[in-house]
Length: 124
Image (cartoon, rainbow, N blue to C red; front, side, top):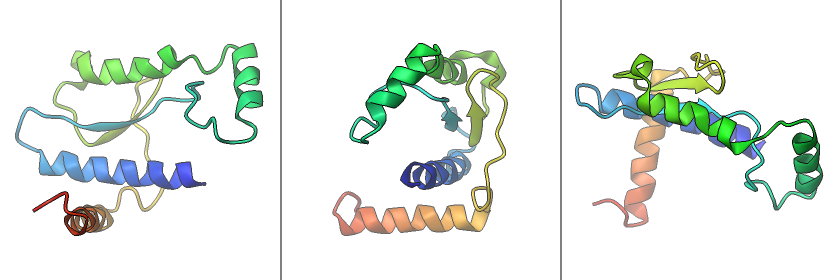
């Protein structure tokens, strides 16, 4: 549940950052790397069992998950493309669930993040 919520916020933040960076050569995109056995959820009680199952069926190779990252950074197809959410394997855009595409919610998230960082002393 936490992963889903943070992924949603990541998608929203990425789209807003893409708008903020519009007009320069920097691009940002979010991605769905698929299932990967990276140890990220190792603190979960079932993580080792899940890793064994995924490995048995040859699912979860981190190199496969990295493929979309490399493609977004180097493939001419994505040159100048920014603020999107893309799927591993196909590289096709994913339409995220609501409220991910809500511009006003994205702006609110950006402002809330700025305020939090200011409160913590990370921004002037």
